[in-house]
Length: 232
Image 1: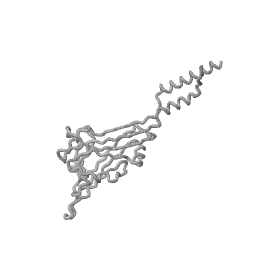
Image 2: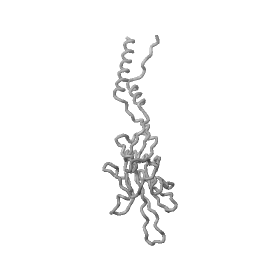
Image 3: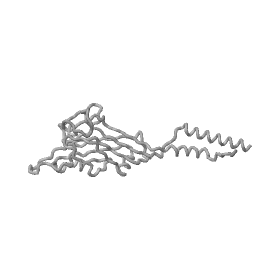
Image 4: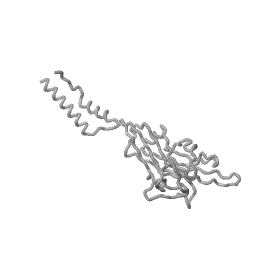
């Protein structure tokens, strides 16, 4: 009978366990309750019944289920909004990210409507503008869609400093009537149902379960003991 020698050290076995623990993973986080902008009983892609609405409930994120202009009634007019996705408890700055996308269930964007002129709603991820994010979008005043954006290398690198994704929309304005001197354009109306991020990782910093390491260590000790007995 042929004898098979165990030539791996305990350290090598542990290293092997760590190396074999590498796995690709998909992490998804959704902010907002996917209730069709608070109207319910409908799906993204269909129009909302009205504009200038506020369907927020106490547990809704501040950016969702309302006409973004609703936050400024009685205060300085503006239609900007920002929020964050926090994955700091799930990722480290050593996690290898292979793909990162942002999806927005959003409505009311009319940047591509030629009758309105240059509305120019702008999207920033990690403070870096997504150039032309809404330039080809014309949903009409009531329309809705699920828009997807792939993060750039620079945006991913910035995110990995703290694993918190910063998102900001700089709301546009409908250009004023040129015939009216000093006129100010109307704030663009838009609304968000939910924000979802999907992160694909190839985490080469994974650590195996303690039971896996102990099992391999025991195997190494058993092999070493067997070889000593045979030599005696």
